[in-house]
Length: 223
Image (cartoon, rainbow, N blue to C red):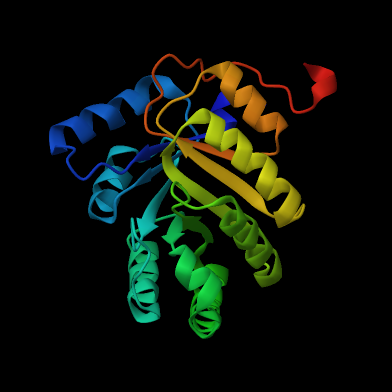
């Protein structure tokens, strides 16, 4: 597996200027080999235009960053984003809602399942940066019970936290749970370790210093 197959570029800084966004997308067109990019909803249509013909998958965030919105708000943003051309979505849900409001989660599941089937993949994002260990274990169990297949953790986590979370969620979330951790940046060696710990995707805010063609090993025996 190449680095480009593991990482996802996150362009979710609301302070980014239009010309900076355009320059970054042009750089991706010319040099990167990146497979997917996730952007803010306000930039989705523009990025679709700038990356047209590249084959790069473009996603956006929903109810970001807190994930405390109503079911109606989330469902509206999901439908609107798919109509605007998103190929996958990252839906933020607060840990409190996910763990302590089962009626809302059932309603959300009923509302979003048809949209996911009709339009595309919806990943569940939880801001895990300040969560205690036991809450993370409960989250993993909740995802397993719901049968939701993608969990995205944090925003700009440090590498040691990401490695620990990878081990926790692989053990408590079950084999069907696909895990993404979000970092500011990472080295090839750090990506290799995360891959071996069961991480399926690494969201990065910066690709600086990365060789996206670098081959990562998927088992310990290959290292």
